[in-house]
Length: 495
Image (cartoon, rainbow, N blue to C red; front, side):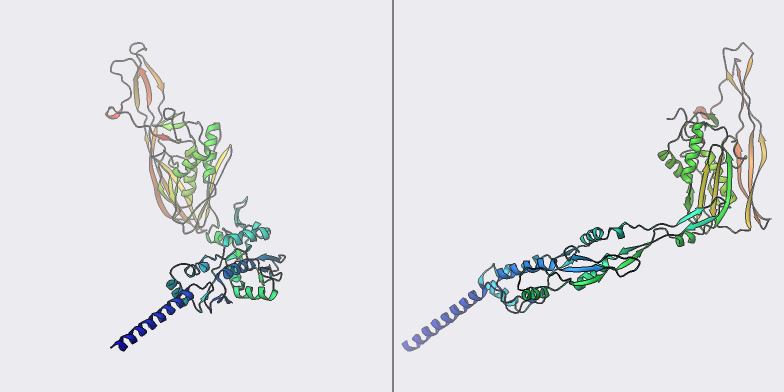
């Protein structure tokens, strides 16, 4: 029995010695300061290096790699450039080492058992070196190196309307641009692996030295940057010729009215309308006021001509309206003035009142429409260019279908002698006018369209009297009429 107990004790002691030895081995394995065998970093064998030596050499190889030289040249005869040598760092190469050095941290911290287990798992691993090319840094370097390439800018094509209204084009011109994205792909392909750098460094016997021999010669990749506006896109818009024109006289206009007309005409000059697009006059009145401002000139306020701001803007809309009618386009919104105007026939005017009356038309052709204006001290002209059948024309006729007699109104003037009547102003007749558009093909009328039926109010003959019962002009429902300003933007009482 005693002998059996003695054997058990000896066995336990042996087991404890084995366990202690094993623990010591694990602790020794986990506390080693070298990298496990078989590890490579981009082909560079680093297994067995001390961790400190690895980190030091990694930093040195990084600098050597960033300093590697690439010779860039142009092989295009239409873009001759002198070859230039650049370091990979100048070309935007970045080598963040954090992902690699992070693998080392578990070898330095934690329990011996944890370090030993982690160390064992690292054996024979192949590590990659994170690398990237900074597109912004590459662009900045290329801009400095090849300023002439980046200074060139594409030239847009131009549509020219000649003195006789003939359409011609100035071609666009593209420029060659360095294909920076493709160049980055080429740089990834020629970047040396870290193992190559380490091997070259070992062969030179001078750690950290930079090679003077280019890593590679790269031809600059180019692409052609087209102009934003090409002759092809302009021609595809289908603007082939002048399709209508209308002019109105600007004689004896005040300086303010002339300014308002010319400024508004300038705002719609060279306007391009796509097929189906609706022209909105209110938009361009707002743009004109913001850009040029409107000046004082007579406006129509509730059917009377009074001083105001913006007088003359309806001559532009009316001139445009006539050009639109003669091009056969669709009218979306239009109203005549409350009073006849002198620059177009009755029934062929288009008034405007902010927030109340607008002028709108649609480009009802399948092609783009170009609107051009010209204005001077004597004449305002609107021309429309586009494409309609060459054998089709339009004519406009307005007919007065009714004449409205001027009403008579009396106002009270107590200063007049009893029974005396004084004529203050003569009335003007009003009119009801119908306007027709005739479509002609090869000189023969093929369609008739009534465009509008307009009423121009008669202006009363006004007398003053002190007779009993004579009152001021009647106001419906005893309420004042809301101010309606035509042919302008503001009246004298509405700043």
